[in-house]
Length: 66
Picture 1 (cartoon, rainbow, N blue to C red):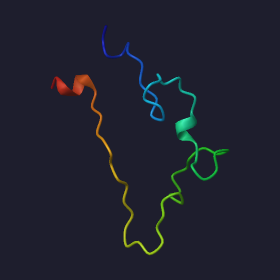
Picture 2 (picture 1 turned 120 degrees about the horizontal axis):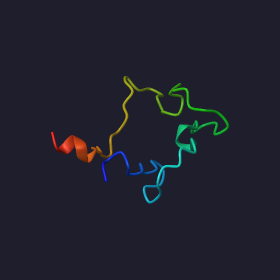
Picture 3 (picture 1 turned 60 degrees about the horizontal axis):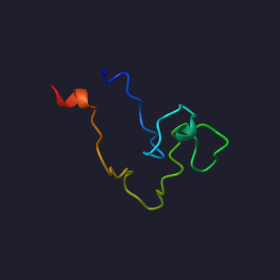
């Protein structure tokens, strides 16, 4: 079985396979719209810069073989 045959995991619930429902593309502030990267969901009051905290880096097994 090659890596393309395996299902991607859901980014919202890692116990499920991705079924391309689009829920992960929804706006956090207005779930009725698709996220357009307006960045209003990030709290920026008084901040000198914007930052996104990275919890984990996930690599494909094919990336590890190189």
